[in-house]
Image 1: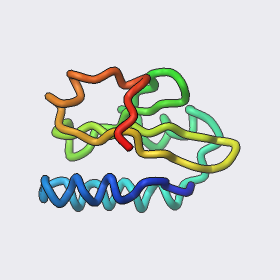
Image 2 (image 1 turned 90 degrees about the vertical axis):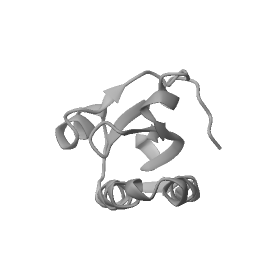
Image 3 (image 1 turned 180 degrees about the vertical axis):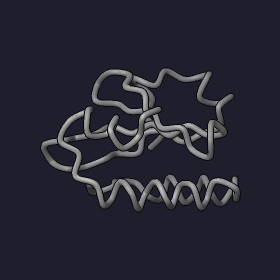
Image 4 (image 1 turned 45 degrees about the vertical axis):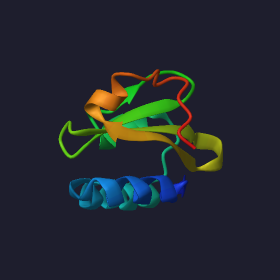
Length: 100
């Protein structure tokens, strides 16, 4: 998959150093993946949540951080929409948030 907006992740781990390695690991795994359906993601990430509009929520570093992406399966692209703490995640609508 092509991951769009890696700068959003980089800016986040510069503020939250403990998120750097888990986010880099997620990025490497997503980049190596070839997801063609939500089932492909669920197979790799059992705890991923699907919130509509091809949006997926990933738990990062256990459940410390939440990453929301939009997946364009046909184009093999993943768009970073939001990365934040669990508390920040609780304040947004995962189906509509635009962090970019």
